[in-house]
Image 1 (cartoon, one colour):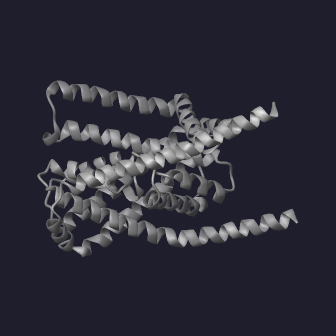
Image 2: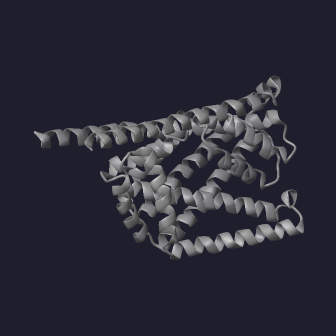
Image 3: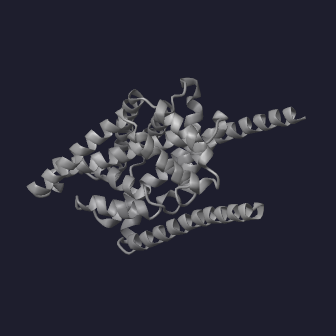
Length: 343
């Protein structure tokens, strides 16, 4: 019987590793395909000219907006997790680790990194950071969906027929009512627990023991924290909008006010799929499609996406390095304390 259990555990562990490798391979394949599409749509000489004409004095403002977005994301995560303000630096460190991980590693592995890093810094089980991270990402999905609805209904360039608009309006009214209902009922617990169970199955071979802790966290989650999370999500959207507006301005693109919002939508939707590090290829094709509505050439769109990626990468690395040094020191202190206790 024991041999059967060991064999089953080995099979589960093997399936977990295969799932991770499959996600990484699929991400690299998607990015490679999209890079090929982008490269076939651009003119290299025009791309070099567009990149050389970038007004660099706008980029510090872009980097500042990205940094503010990182800070607000960590603050929202802390509020959702119901932790004290003196714990904020730990959430900021975990957030920067996660974003940096998504930029350096394929398959959005940064999401796993930030959860594990926060659990270690808080010296808690994985349940608390995992459950709060699921809620945190759910708010992003709500804002992405709402943004698509508002753009489709309110911007003439994207408006469909009256019948389609009525269907979209009904859909988003139902979405708003659903969000409000989730904040006031236990249905949100079941949905979040289901998502946590799926994520845990990819991380651990034996995850059922953690689900009880996740369920306890969900039951303690209040509507007030949910509304504060939504408000902070609105501020995050504003920071991202200003960052993309700065990128478009640095390229001398005089576009309607909603163009930066449309670019945010296609970037957010594109970043939700597994891809190569830094969303290479995904952002380029997303920019071609999103800015194409405004008559921007594919070459200039790729230049805009590249400028944004380079600025975001530099900002995140600068924000991550001090936190990484601090994290290593804290890990060393904890290791030495545990070693003394064991002696």
